[in-house]
Length: 364
Image 1 (cartoon, rainbow, N blue to C red):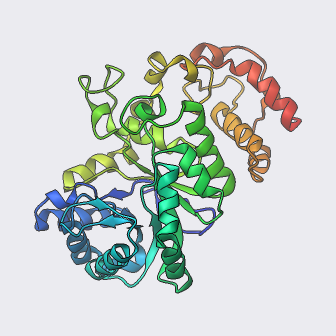
Image 2 (image 1 turned 135 degrees about the vertical axis):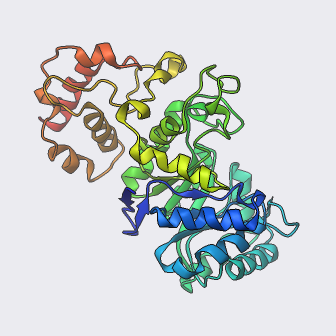
């Protein structure tokens, strides 16, 4: 397993996490085996925005003995009163549900207590007026909740909540379909979505990625909005390449699902390459570096993806970006303008010109 360190909390987080969305559909024995298999193979991050109540019972049975080694996302606003997922801002219902989830999970604390699934500004207003936010903050003060998170599909709403300074972790839907205006949750332009990811990295807010496969649509030629399928490995790599991302949470309800997600760790670079997206992304995404490194290898040894990333982050105020840039073996000023990268970039970025701009900005 590979791990990334949360810049605010210091937690070591597995880059492949466990999305429990479909876990309730499995038989208890199969679900428990899948959870245990995940832990045995290094997965330590679990999200509990699931489709049904059985998930909590399964997880409590499978994970209670190793709870102190794991990181849980629990959502203040997810309602399982009927046995199936529901959404609420009713304070009494949220209190009842959080107590029930803690009991079923066999834990007395929550690593990330999430402001759950807000996509409209009216949702945020309702969440505050109902007392749900105040309750979540009280739970944090008491130590039951260690850190505050937010789940959303909308850049505008996410930015509004991040402005409060309360949030340490953002759960956001990141995949090529949503980033390029395809799908139910394709909110915000490609530019707005990337700006959100950059903001999170600049401010030390971790991102956990939901819906990396766009609910499976990206995995088939017939259902992909691009008319061409991507693999699960490509989708995971696409998400992990985005600024601020710490972990990707594919939905799993079997050992087979977990194995398919873990296959990313042993995949060759060619298997991870998602540059095919450059042939069918919208015009507004052309000319924007997405750090895919398809331009590599650079004859002069520049890591063009990282140079672009640190430049973009510096421009949005990341105080560490310049330091990271300075630590690179080669800098933008080492570019000789051979044009090799320009010809290989699937997103039509004029990298040789951009290197001049970056060199002027950093002074090297």
